[in-house]
Picture 1: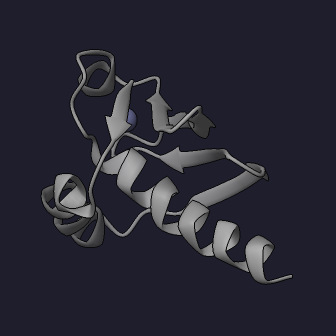
Picture 2: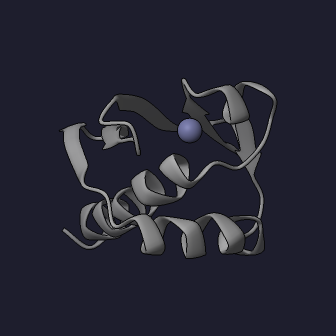
Length: 88
Ligand SMILES: [Zn+2]
């Protein structure tokens, strides 16, 4: 799990995500499934706890507090959906 503080954190992960071009599956608002490079799926949770934006991915990198590309994929979808919700 990591705390999202700025978009800069995601920069490298987004570059990697774009190279891999995986698919992100919507499960529910804040919960997504991203297909990994080995065909496996990672569950990513994006949630707001107080003022913190927590991103939880079940991969090894994220469990060490790193920003993984799975999270970057899920976040790009999540941010768009969150924006739609606010304007709806
Ligand atoms: Zn991950």
